Image 1: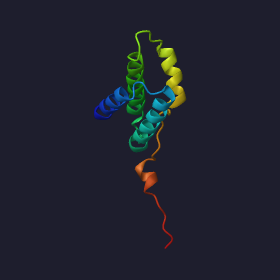
Image 2: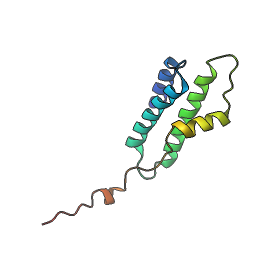
Image 3: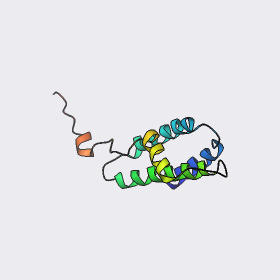
Image 4: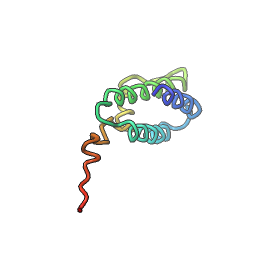
Length: 104
C-alpha cells in the first residue's frame, strides 16, 4: 500500500494544476483498480485506510495550488464522496468462490 500511495503522490504532483474533475476521474480509476485487487474479506480496515490516505494526499496536493487555499476537510469529504468509491468487499470467501458444482 505504501508503494502505491507514493506513486499516487508523484502522479498527483504532476497533475496538480489539472481541473478537479479530471483529477477526480483519474483517482476514481486508480482507487477502483486497487479495490478490485485488494477487496477480499477481512481487509476492509486496510481499504478504508487506503481511501483515507488517498484523500489526504489529494487534499495536500490541492492546498499547494495557491497561497490562498480553501481546501478544508469538509470540502475534501465532499470531493471524496463524489469521486472516490467507498470501500467494500468485492471477492467472496474462498470456500464460496471454489464451491462449483459440475454436472456429472
